[in-house]
Length: 430
Ligand SMILES: Nc1ncnc2c1ncn2[C@@H]1O[C@H](COP(=O)(O)OP(=O)(O)O)[C@@H](O)[C@H]1O
Ligand SMILES: O=C(O)[C@@H](O)C(=O)COP(=O)(O)O
Image (cartoon, rainbow, N blue to C red; front, top):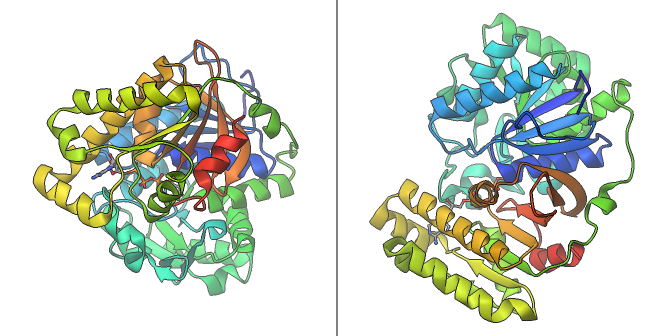
């Protein structure tokens, strides 16, 4: 990549979220590439309008998340980035310690500018924000399945309160009644938030039209924080202002066949994924890992999974899953500790994915954000090109810069996709 200015730089706090955003930006006409971490100097990237730097920083210690995000911002700044979007989950996955607040605060200090506009709204997938409260479909966040997330259970729907607990700068609200009045009303309210000495404002949005207004206002400053909906708003504002000429086509070519066997690795315990797994059982051989055995002797359980694959991969795709219902997840965590369980299962699934690729798998679907992070890191993938959309928020990805030839992958956020997602994904991967 030889260009000296970049219309939009994005720092995503997990890898599925990054591919969700890259998908949204591509569909809105921005030429986009997703890198895994800050790219190494020698990595050859195409000329693009937007770069999404994917970090695995959602559920780590806040100071480490801040350091990684500032590194990414320095890399983007060196490419003359005009605006940075800190991509967080549309369900605002975080704890009272972070990392949405601390990273937003640190990036604001690095970038300058007034209060940061923050909205996780992504109406296409049912995430809306009204009077500062986040809804998942028709349920407030704290009544939705996210209340049982294995790593970040979300028990408060009031995002002003949630962000305020995590950040040092004070948090205001720009409500839907203001957004409905247009860009200048949002700007005026942001000025009021600044005058009140607050560093960020949660912004309501219930439809894509709201996000276009918010995107236009956000572009006044160097930084915003949000999910793919805000990415859409920023992309529309960049195109409308003539700063980006929309590109069309190209996504289908990214998904051109790579051959080889296919597999699905599932570490998400989200409601949507559990339904997808149940549907997959009618179509593919599925091995459900014994998580107690895995925690006692991970290598033996990984070997069992790979033996299962060895016996079946020649005949078609196989599925290996650790997923369990919320009661079983809670019981396992009570016995072994939440963080330890999450980390060790992720690492075991990364071992399974590595074993599968050693056995020739070139098309791989991974379900779960943290799980995808562990798998992509283990496979050493430097970057992805963005292909056609499988379901809202989930594109086909083609590895870039990976020795040994390209692979096709899909990184599915736990809550995304319909019941037939896995079959649909494999059908689109040749
Ligand atoms: N059976 C299980 N019991 C407890 N935790 C699990 C189980 N299976 C997977 N996990 C962990 O749950 C977490 C799921 O998070 P993630 O992969 O981000 O999925 P999602 O996208 O649904 O949030 C991971 O840390 C994973 O290792
Ligand atoms: O914004 C979203 O909902 C997704 O892009 C996302 O980040 C989901 O995270 P995981 O469910 O942990 O994959």
